[in-house]
Length: 348
Image (cartoon, rainbow, N blue to C red):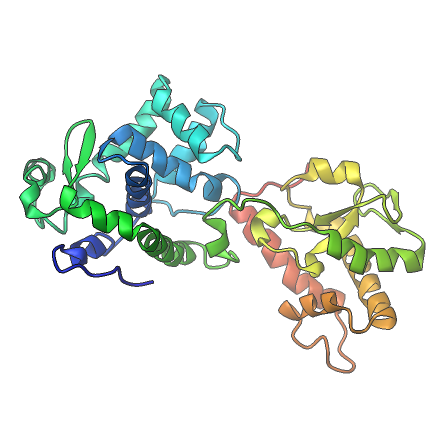
């Protein structure tokens, strides 16, 4: 979504221009935080609440999916530091994060939040006041007849009443606009990371893997009697194993069968989002996958999960074409390397 709905009484083009030449994520999360506050009925909003909102909106993307915001962007650093300062979990809710940051007295946290005061509130309004410095933008913004989005004060902003109806009526579209542009920005910073759009918001629930279990791996195990966990060597039987992501879900953001294997239940709960050391576990992973493909092709050649392999092996359906260890290695190893470079840790 490249544009916002026009309004003959408002300079919407200036709001869009706020995102020209963007070198950090701040402006996207700043506007998202403003919209969130307006939707809750506020027109006078403390800067601390807005900075807290920025942190909360980017929390999951940074802590759960380890998306890089780029070297110049300090929002990622602030989130990583604040998580430790405030003892917040990676899956904390937005309200929990915001309430914690609004009420905190931790000087380290306050320093992280206050950093954004010199980066965002006044420069966001620069399209209305081109060429003006910080003090001039503060002064001129308080004359709301100029139709700028908000007036700046030391501790808060005051939304221009002329904009309220537009922002409320188009809140959903404005958020989509922010996320659309944010995806483009983050894809440049993370060119090899899959599925950026689905890593901006915390999903309500993760999809169940029951079908992958009952319609694929149970068939394999039923034919073999058991398979061995590649991590613990425990014998796994139907009803006594977990379906786990070899490369963490937090990185790949999908449940395709080529990345799923049976594993010891107790081990799966401790592996969490850690990466498996490639040289130690790839051979066992490949052997399980190759054995499963051969069995499913023989017993259920129309099994829909075979189609999942087409996403990485486009020629799997052609006669005489096999998924060799080399082919699988060429697909899996780079993903593990990229995930590691993005902050995912290896299993100890």
